[in-house]
Image (cartoon, rainbow, N blue to C red):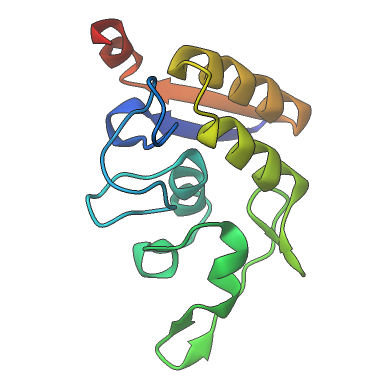
Length: 132
């Protein structure tokens, strides 16, 4: 595994509306409160900009995001393929948005998903979950 993705619990928005939710505001790649779902955090690490992901619900929404008059599209196995969301991004969104699982369970599921895609998930600020 040579690809590494980082999930920062301090910036994470997940489980909106559920008893185990983290963060504030709506669950988006990057919301108006500055919180990001797991895919928003991963997208920034993979070269997307805050302008490209702000207020977007899913990676496929980036495809239609017009920046400086140009339609920008990056293609990778984690976030976007040539037609929209990847299998990875759809599975990660399902894990992130589940209202019934705890953040610790989500982290374990995301680690397993990343491993399937030859990627390592690094978790920052996991100690913040102890207070929950």
